[in-house]
Image 1 (tube, rainbow over the protein chains, first blue to last red):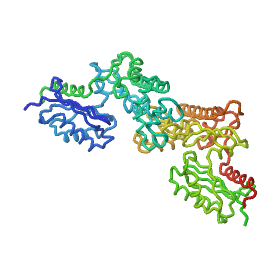
Image 2 (image 1 turned 60 degrees about the horizontal axis):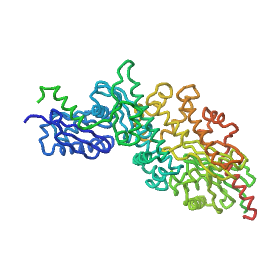
Image 3 (image 1 turned 180 degrees about the vertical axis):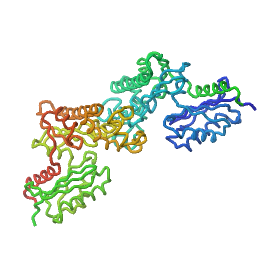
Image 4 (image 1 turned 90 degrees about the vertical axis):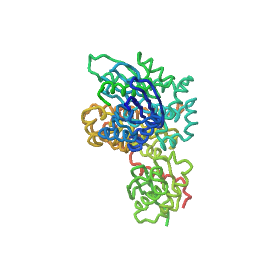
Length: 294
Length: 294
């Protein structure tokens, strides 16, 4: 039996998405499950979750038929020396015969938005980071220091600004935050800081409805995110071409005022398309580059 | 035996200071111990600590000789309905015959800086809050929302800005932060966010030595703190006199660039002097206003 299937995964903190294709990149299956980030869930649990997703998307097909598997992993950068060990854990949990290739989620997101090999990708979800991509690989990053030290413009930041506004403001957004968190905003937030990120859609919704406080927060978020892109781009050597700008992540991709603001602030920037499919196509490309593989 | 002693306490998160005076406000004893904030330590433990401090400063004198006890309490504002219960816990733990009077730490700090009864007091320590004082009582506050939602210019904020600088900067301050937190700054900070406040003296020290990055952080801190004072002052009805401006807290009071910056940004502002002594004098004043008391 020939190994004629490839797998692409997009593994984040809150969701894992997998796509199965043939070697030409045609989709054969798709599966989505909860997150499998090794930093959030621990490497053993994360690998087990990823293995489970692989078996689900294979839907009974023999794992030995998989010729390549590429995983775009949120938090890849900070995995450090544990990278190869985690890749092996994933391979074993999935029952694959071939090694699993882990890569920076930004590399896959960039490939999901453009055919070009260099440029900048912005990932704005719960956190916010921009990466300069050279020849398909991350060459520099801006932001991405997490909710305590950075991530301005991220979902967490949007929610934090909404809570700060509600502490002294009035109007629709302030009332919506109090309805969500209760009257004692400080107690609710300090009991569970990461809950702030869940307020981000409130900000976008109220900005869309014309709430001036929400609109001002969205404008500042867009300014921060565009600045991240410029910072990542500026880290490039002078004289190189600018390349494509791709944006990804729930905050950037969800239709609404943040996305429109990014499109206005970054002319020519394009949304990342199907990220797990892009991972699968990278996997397929790695097979065709290695025709001697079984 | 007549009740001719009074007690004043300044109870914070990291230290509790007590002063014993006679009814004329002359100091008879002084004691300092670790913090007794009920939010940080729980009300039972906090009251036990405060009781222990009272016994230490009395140094064997009969608690029945105490005519009044005033405690300026960090976190008083958020004690809410638990205030009277906590005051009674403190009284019982201290073995006093008279009730303990809890008040906002800002009121005592203001009294420790001026003879006036109205104005604004800034407390900049680990956190940052400014309060407008009218007739000795807090009438409005600005800031004070804690490390996650506010406290710009505070010790926590100074440390966070230093860590953010060290993540991408070079030079003296960046090296000092790495020496303190280790090479993996993100790991150190996320493991213990409150550790950031301990970096504040590094920022002041490097600013004093001419480090431009540290100087820029100090300048922004001073701007934030002065803005808090203006925000608290602006909450006052138009036409009222401006009153005194008093500053307190370790970040504002420690000699160095932040303190000098505040003195330049807030002409006429004066440092809070002896806060527990001011509490004792408020206690003495309450006795002389009630001459019929035993």
